[in-house]
Amino acid sequence: MKLSILLPTRNRLDLLRGAIETVRRQDVGDWEIVVSDNASDEDVGGYVASLGDDRIRAYRTERFLPVTENWNVALERSSGDYVVMLGDDDGLLPGYVANLERLVERFGTPDVVYTSALLLTCPGVVAELPHGQLSPYGYASFFSGATEPFVLERKVAHDMVRAAMDFRLTYGYNSQFLAVSRRLIDELAPATPFYQSRFPDYYSTNVAFLTARSIVVDPDPRVVIGVSPKSYGFFHENKREGEGRAFLGGAGDADAELERISLPGSNINVGWLSAVEAIAHGYGARFGLRVNRRRFRLLQSVHVYEERFVHERIGAEDLAALEARLRPRERRLYRGCARVAGWLARVLPPRLRRASEYVYRRALRQFPRWDQTALPGRYASVLDVFEARRQPPDRSGS
Image (cartoon, rainbow, N blue to C red; front, top):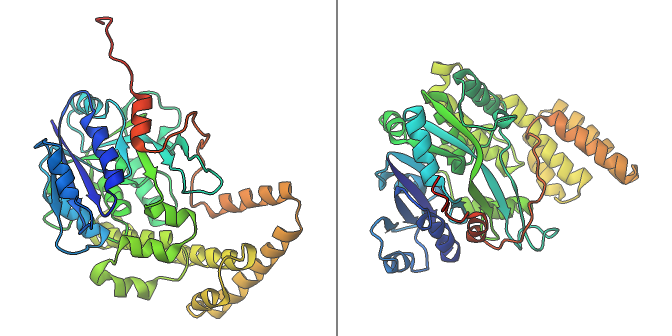
């Protein structure tokens, strides 16, 4: 079994080095790394050539591409039996390749192997975490109580995609969570590219869960997902929506239709809408899927009114942009609720305010709860995490 690790990158050579090293330091396994350099100003190709390893190849695009196009470029250049897409601030954990080989052999070449992960918030991302933080990031509901790898029921997988169409997150869509078989990718390729929409991982992960014949779940963390000061996650964490959109690039011809049905608000929700609309277009009739656009409108409206009246982080012009797209009844309802929420945020004692915020978040049903307790240690990069979790070789002979 050969594994392809795809690494799209742009002007983040310092991060790319660490991601590549987490693969090079795997103890065993047949693998290749495909670096798709998205017109960087840095000499990515020169660095890859200096490694002197023909399993690691770099390709440079002639111009800056939107993130989804660059992902497909990397995929087209790969040849492995399984594919995992990493960001250049992510990494594999020790034993990833060997563990994947064992699971593929044990479960008879499943279409998808889905694992848990760790989340590394690097120093400089969140002001309240000046030294960064490493925490568990395996929040899929099917991980609950699991201690050993198992085959996920197809109905459960399909139900999770239906939740995604309803803008409810019941498992992680990040591409780092899953290795996808070339067989499945090739079966889907004649009809449509494997990566689509503004958020290609939201699209591809859900399509894989829809179409896979067999999904193996490994509840142990096998990858580390990094959020660096140079990542989209940084802009999201710091409420810098415009810069985050520019970071990802445009989305091509589908933008006009997306703008017609979209609303101002959270860029996460707009990217999510882009993905589920593409899923509905390609697979809606076959699987009976529909996008819950009404719920999308609710979530976007709640986001803008909360930012304006509760947190006071946006101006009147942002609110006006939303209200121009709302129906009169929606405007009256949301504005009234937001004014009450803003007043409560100012007058409630801190303990009651936190309790009310918790109830509010749970009522939205958009994101799951999971254990985000910080793990011990300080880590500046994914390579630091890799080395800290590396176990000495077993010399007992067992």
